[in-house]
Image (cartoon, rainbow, N blue to C red; front, side, top):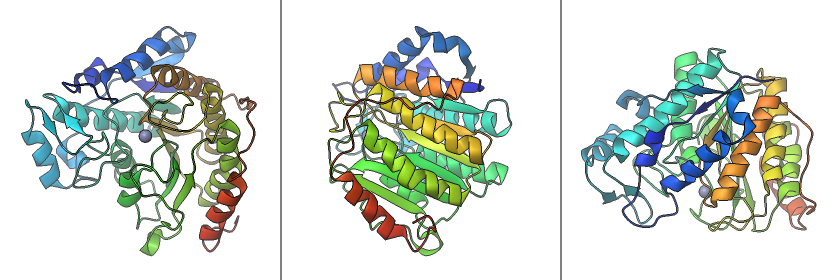
Length: 345
Ligand SMILES: [Zn+2]
């Protein structure tokens, strides 16, 4: 049995558009309801979030940008074509980042082995000086920088399985060999970045690994990507902490995505990550909610992930759909792009 924490707080529902928007409070309501009605709930440790202070947000973002966001408190505003701010959003965005920071504290201090920050707004598209793609502050990037700054961690692996490329996270660590970033995403698709050739720069060259996929990939494909790329590279990198941008928009019913992952698939890839974490970093793993716009997929996906986090169960059960015909070539291209940097390739 693991010791698993979650961040859950109704204040995250206060970030809401005045019009219909796919990134809405119902997403978290569905997750909170789903886990509360499931037997998993009594096995989880609830961890209080806090409002991250400006200095913590500034680990990733420019002060000028933070001040701009703060100045919109009490009003509604579109920050780009997709990203809204409502009256309380500046505070709630800081509460999202601060929830993750408290989870980092709980994991690093040993209070819990692993945890899932069930927070919003999401973060992985946010750039240092601008909001983007429903994201205001880049929660996972702030969390990783905080773990490095506060606890002197030198190597963190971030695995981003959200449907969309995490451009903000990639850019935050593009020249940083201390953060190994993997992104599996639909490509070409929003936000347009995430090609094989984006491998990092300077000292960070080789530490940014994109796995761009056409649509239609399912459980077996994601499992093979872990076996062929993520697991061997992580074993070479030896992270002290693994963080996951968990997006449930790769679910087969998701209205914004074109992937075919089932709830079993979310459990399977979590098992694979737990195997890596158990072998390399005492099981320390932090998942952060990103996208996911089908309410059933969000709730069931989260339950599957938490089940594996709590039990540590490694048995892989996936849908019967096999490996997509184009995946071997994609894996080959990822290995070719990175063979100068990783011995396993
Ligand atoms: Zn997404």
